[in-house]
Image 1 (cartoon, one colour):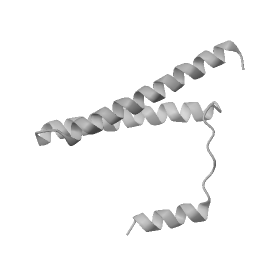
Image 2 (cartoon, rainbow, N blue to C red):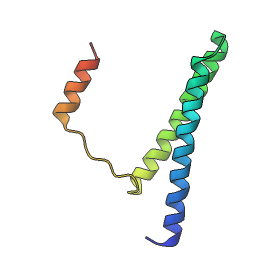
Image 3 (cartoon, helix red, strand yellow):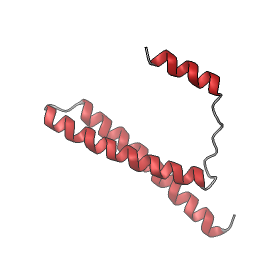
Image 4 (cartoon, rainbow, N blue to C red):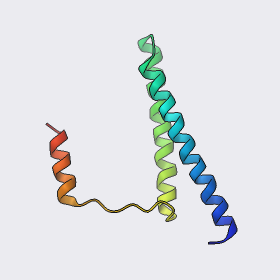
Length: 85
């Protein structure tokens, strides 16, 4: 990995950590909103931030910088059934 790749990797990791902090904050703000209108707006913003976080995560994974193991299909199916009740 060359120096430029390392710099890119650090930038993307910082972006992902920042998005995680932003979503935590919006979640807290939405939970503590005094009015439904404010809560709805914060939830809309939270959703937008989650989309950005997912895009960053997908890019990092696509570059091989965030390896994840594949889930066992049987276990995933069991968990899905458990929470669909």
